[in-house]
Length: 286
Image 1 (cartoon, rainbow, N blue to C red):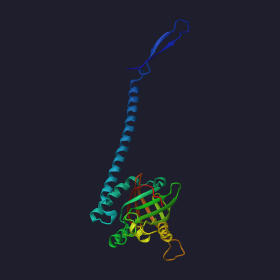
Image 2 (cartoon, helix red, strand yellow):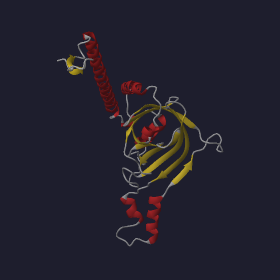
Image 3 (cartoon, one colour):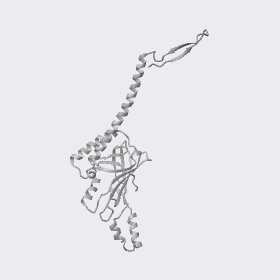
Image 4 (cartoon, helix red, strand yellow):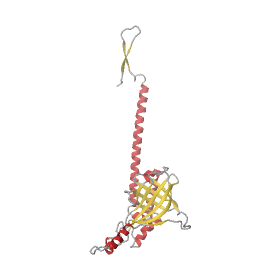
């Protein structure tokens, strides 16, 4: 239905005003059709954009779930077949395509990330040692903790390994191995790591060892209690030096952050150092 409004015209003779019906949409039917087409096209484009964004996000979440499903039975990369490694690499490359060209978001990177899978030899050797030597077990989790929220070009990264020695330390969180490094953003998605220190801390001895040091049935002496307190608060720090020249800074490494969103981080150690799959974890208090 066309809309109309009334206006009054006053003749020069001073007679009664003449009322005339003016219809603003009867002037040009083609104009009305063009207006309707443009309005419909604009609405359709907006809806199409929203649908595309939702479909893309849905596809990304599906691919992330597929990747986690592929790595879940690999013991974080220790036990894999060639077919598994091929499928995992294929899923990684597919997911990395969604972040291609974007710069590293340090605010989003900041926080604690739990390792789900790696092919890095220097990490797999820890898992192999735990499987080979019964006195050393990587029974807890492995994390990377980034501290860079208030930085613009770098920050600190801490590699956290929770390990244990059976009968001497608690089973799941006996002690913490911490490898700290500074990092600088050197390109859109590359960061350079400068390793600084290796430390052992958060030692939690087993109940059996506590009973041996300070038997519960005997009066606990001041010395035995001091020994327990010393073990619990013990921290060992070893600076990382350049093996060729101990006086110089330690060697570093280039790390490519190939994918990053609110709950998943993918990385590649440049130079064939392996791939890493992380998921967001609760904050660590170190």
